[in-house]
Length: 116
Image 1 (cartoon, rainbow, N blue to C red):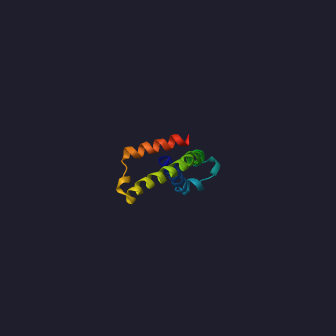
Image 2 (image 1 turned 90 degrees about the vertical axis):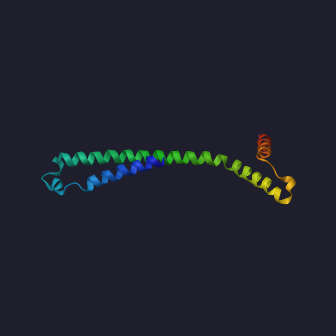
Image 3 (image 1 turned 135 degrees about the horizontal axis):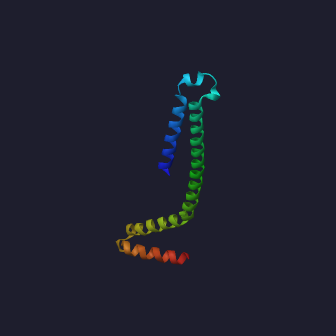
């Protein structure tokens, strides 16, 4: 998603630069409505602007969807974090309570099954 935003920014800057640096002689020459090069440039800028707008809307929709999915796992992550730190702090009370990773994983799986 970050790459897409970077690309859109590049397209926007390029279109804006092309429009702003259009030779003033092309704009001031005769009727502005008959200037094909200027009209083509404006149409191209308009099309890229519409594409950028659509992409930004899609990006915001995707970001909201990802936030919603992430928030669904937040309570689970908080519980797992608390359980891990409680178990690791038990060894500070007494060395007898020193747990291996395998033991922690078994306790973790039991806690998951109990939540179901």
